[in-house]
Amino acid sequence: MTISVVAVRPPSPVELGVGMRLSIHPHCDNYVEVILGALADLAADGLTESLEITTDELGTHVTALTFPAEQRLADYLLGLIRAAHRRSDGGHVVAHVLLSRGCPGEVRCDLTATGLTAATPIVLPPAWIAATAAWSLYPMTDGEPSIDVIYGAIEGACARGTVRDGMHFATRLSGDLADVVATGFEAWSRVGASVAHVVTHLTLSVGSPTVEHPSPKE
Amino acid sequence: MTISVVAVRPPSPVELGVGMRLSIHPHCDNYVEVILGALADLAADGLTESLEITTDELGTHVTALTFPAEQRLADYLLGLIRAAHRRSDGGHVVAHVLLSRGCPGEVRCDLTATGLTAATPIVLPPAWIAATAAWSLYPMTDGEPSIDVIYGAIEGACARGTVRDGMHFATRLSGDLADVVATGFEAWSRVGASVAHVVTHLTLSVGSPTVEHPSPKE
Image (cartoon, rainbow over all chains, first blue to last red; front, side, top):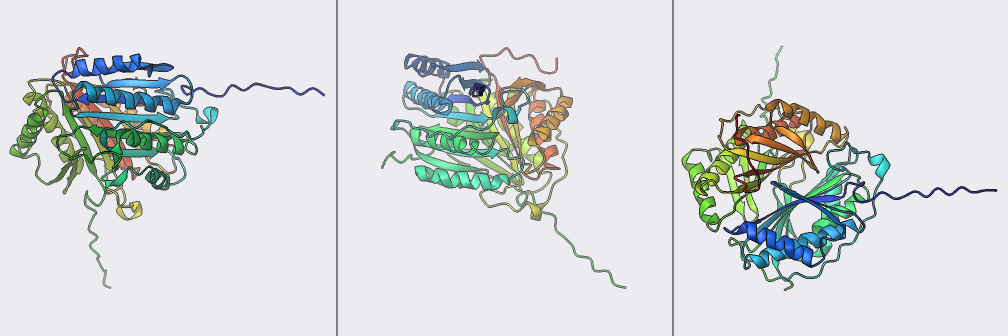
């Protein structure tokens, strides 16, 4: 008897449509210098390896070419905000982030061909920078009530200790920048294990003059 | 024969969960002055009437207390970006906007109680400011394939002449700032007539140093 073995190559992060759009806003006259410097820091720290990065006037798109894709993207985002914060002398920096999976760009997606990914735990070293964030999650369930998935994800995120309260259309997170970033990434990854197309938006703020940030890790 | 007439009060925009979260980023040292000045301009121009506006460190939430809610919110957003652009001497200003309907804040929504709204055409005077935007639409269909709703909305938006091309996870819009804002609002309003819970995100950019903006209306 002959058994035929067909090697099925698992889909890559790019084929799964796992990626991130982000824009970062240092609120200072020399914002171009701060952004370009922060991007140089990322490359010097090796945080751009195995990533495909394209930039246009509306922001930057980042895709990981290899797994663990979510971890690589989280490392990149954390590194970028840290570097921009440092290079603007601890000034006010806001990053807007869109995490998506299941729709590779503008190509009409074929979710049946790509399937689901496993949830990935996100591990980030403490940044020692206090941060707040507005977090939204959009599971395109096409069936199961999406609000149930959203509330389940919020409950799961509470384990990180960063979930503060509900805002209009978003959930407020606060804590160390690394924990806040990890909360959004991990929930997005976890929902992606059961919902093929899921998007998360994060507005992350550090160094805001309008808030007394609590010291992280207190 | 007696016919009983029960006056059913239609739901308000607040009860329908129609609202906007926005953050605006003038890229200059005096960004606080620019933002506060722009907000004062809006009040002086009467663009804050019938609106409920709350601000926190992550941005501003705006709800219209009366209809046409979508038009009032669009007027406010256009006025804010124009004023910030003017007050920063034509500098680089980016606004991130979340438009939502169907989920009034963190309250678990009862869509069956609120029902659907009619689509509202959005009419805005030309701003004579060139703008680009990244536009995303998330219909929480809970049934009908959401991607069909999204593609239908993009086709509808093409009538405005602002739709440029697909980007990763978003559609690129460009043209006069007023047309770009109207495109996002109108598509969101139109989808809301058939899908109770629908969210749109817009990243709007004016005065970017990294792009040669075509003159609007050429």
